Length: 150
Image (cartoon, rainbow, N blue to C red; front, side):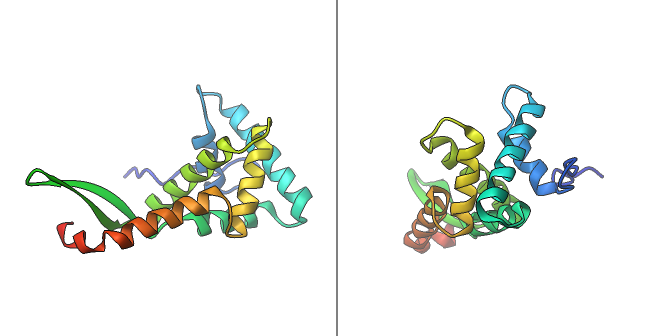
């Protein structure tokens, strides 16, 4: 029985969450470069916060993970944005995607430093990824009247 969330742990931190993040950083199949980017970001987090970077990473993903998402449903010629609850694995995947998207948009040259600062901001409940989660929750709240169309 093969499931999608049974990803292997990474070599240094022995953590599946780190591996999920590396697989999302991955571009053009260059996994060693993705590991290098993440490990540099983790070293930067350790240097800045004097804390365990794995703790900061977990906290950041926990803060960014949404409870609900918006699906677009087309019913009788009208389009409705329907709020739906999501599972924790899907929520984690969304959180990772939002964190990477926000870190890529940050000003600066080095992706590792941009990622580390976005993770630290998210752990402190600020930053663009947190704003994205709040915007999604706000949208779901606004469209709660259509929840019966699920």
